[in-house]
Length: 206
Image (tube, rainbow, N blue to C red; front, side, top):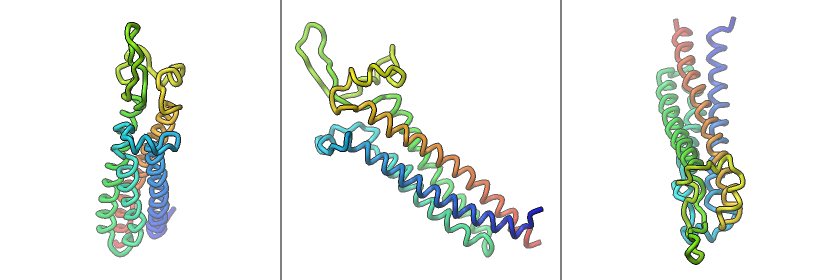
């Protein structure tokens, strides 16, 4: 049977691992959001203001990125308080957990809505009796009969510019969605670890 000091030591190690994992995930989240601002690594769309609102919101930068990175730093520091100040450890743990939870949830919801609405791209809006006309908007947003996520024939036939706009959009917002899910899982483990560490610290003093 594990002794309380050993459990506390394991909790400390777990906090460092969770902090490192969340920090790495936050950097990946920021990188994916930056990629969404440069379709096909072309900066002209950003300079012309032709980037979708979901990417411009930057939830992967400040939500799943900066907020989670700050929380990861605090989580890594909680191990230092686990022996001398267990109450302070729980306070910092809950504060960092809440911050990471909020950032990851914002990124998750934004990514989900972005995948539902589809990419911001140029498409043909002309009817059969009109000359050709193009505009930048969300061609899949009001497409109720077909789901572009499952109908891959729409990926190359609707968006005219940027090239491979649908692939770029789906790929990086899917990455953000998966990263935010991982962050939520790590936050849940962190909260359980903080409460367990507090319980073991009090039992150790008795």
